[in-house]
Length: 262
Image (cartoon, rainbow, N blue to C red):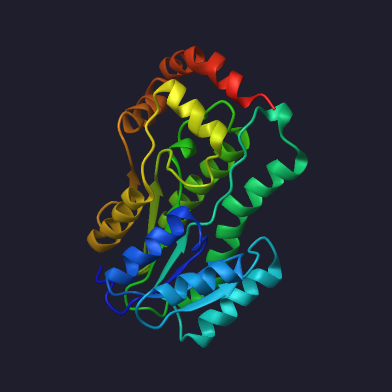
């Protein structure tokens, strides 16, 4: 896919990964519709980028927010690529998480992408080279202690991506699912960073994720892509021999429990 002159709508645009993706897309020649919840950050981002771009501040967990994005797409004359990137995470064992914590993760990470995608499908159908990218996670394939709500939302997003890809197989729309491992952004707080250091888990910079996303769109070959090793290996074994992964994760549990305490 040639990103030159494509109109790309990206949610979570002013976050750690989102901002880096925006810059990478603009470098590839794309025009942006940046979506987020902080108008000040969005305006600053757009002003820092070369070219003419648009932004809209919207809460995608509301019908009003979804409509606001759809209205901006109409004003911009349509969209070629939708990137569902916005996400939230809450680290802690299930009994430590509030109703709001669990609801927010499902609403932002799963329901919002589904509703926004449904809203924009008729517009995407009019594009000459339409695509949807759902930003998943390694935790969308491996259930991990301390991230039950987040894992549930990303498992759901992976299932949504797979089902939608098959549902739209006879249309020009391509559905991509990108699954990063832990990344150095504010979504991972100090506790998570410290836990990953204690466990020896690697964390990528946002640029790594942005590079993978753009190359995936440009190649149009990999409909699902996982970032990082040995995470790819664990995803494979979790599918075929989950008991082996259970055993490995059991050894990590005391360390996770130590950092997950309130």
